Length: 240
Image (cartoon, rainbow, N blue to C red):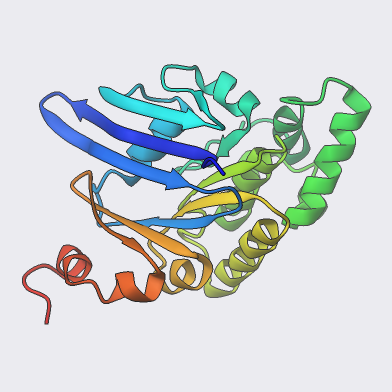
């Protein structure tokens, strides 16, 4: 069976510096992949390339056997790839409900059905009690959940989650882990960028490690955690 997402020699330069360099990756349907690496490793750039926010310098991106590099973000979202942002970007003056309904309207033209989908997502994410609060009034934890809800409302087969646990309390992070695992169990394909190592190692079925835009390790989380190149990239110097 063909992969749901495929990166072929994907490369992105900013000026003369490679943010992502000749990256090859196949993501199978219903995979839960962790994407990790030091700050500046190119992780969010990979998400921006997949989601259409950036165009690659070279290489190809495929989604369900359709080439998508060069498509606008709204076109890629309509195809079925939704993402969150590392820095949350709600419509601050709008209510939580209206923020999420914007996502629901991506695939639902009937207003009543879009409202129904919005209520379902808010309930699933744990924001139904804040539905009519203004988005800018939310705590960081709730704004992270709102970011997640907006992406989920588009009914995507693929979710790209960029540090959805950053800044959360341990309790909030555990709740987020449980939610991600539940969505994966329901059939979604999920790629998670995360610096919370215990969380991503417990969640992901496979781990891809980037450093300076290049893959330095890929595979089972336990094997990746022991990889000398990974230890060196995170800790510096030689691995013990």
